[in-house]
Amino acid sequence: MYIRHSTIGTDEIDDVILVAEDLAISGIYFPQHWTKPDWSTFGPAVDVGTDPVISEAADQLRDYLRGERTSFDFDIVLHGNEFQQRVWKILGEIPFGETRTYGDIAEQLGDRALARMVGQAVGHNPVSIVVGCHRVVGKSGSLTGYAGGLQRKAFLLDLEEPSRTRSERLF
Image 1 (cartoon, rainbow, N blue to C red):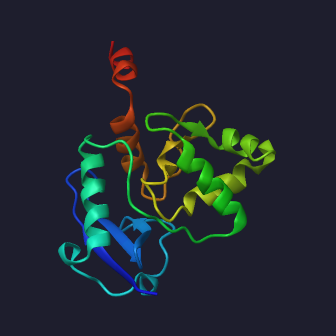
Image 2: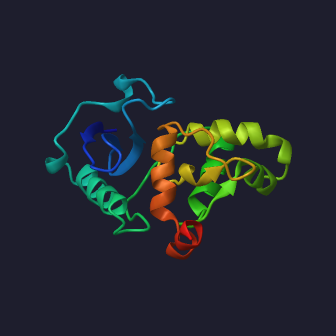
C-alpha cells in the first residue's frame, strides 16, 4: 500500500491536506482539524504536481471552491467502523446545496436517538468536503460542529447555497 500526502493552498479556506492511498484519496484535512489522525499515518510528503492522484483531487477541489464544480470525480477510500461507513454513505448522498440535520440522518438509520453517534461519525469523516459533512446542521438549521472549524463550514454552505435562496435571504 502506497500512502502519501500533499498540502495544497487555497484562497478560500487556507491549506488543505490531501492524503492518497494507492489510486484513491483517503483523507482531506485542515491543519487544525479536530479529528485529524496522527501525521505518521499520512505517509511521506510528495509534490502535488508529480502525483497524478493528488494532483487531480487538488484541481477538482480548487474548482469546487471557486464555484466551478458541484461534484467530484475521483476515487476515495474510507476507513471506519460499520456505523461510520453507514453515516458516511448517507453524507455522500446529500445533494449539493442541500442540508440535513443529525436527527434526519439518525432517523434514516432507523433510530432518532442515534443523533449523538451520528454527530461523532460525521466529525470523523476522513474526506471532508467531498463527502459533504459540512451539509449537516443542527436541529434548527444552526451551524454546529465542524472538524475543520465553523468558519469553513459557513463558507462551504454559502458556496453551495442556491442563488434563489441567497437572494431571498438578502431581500
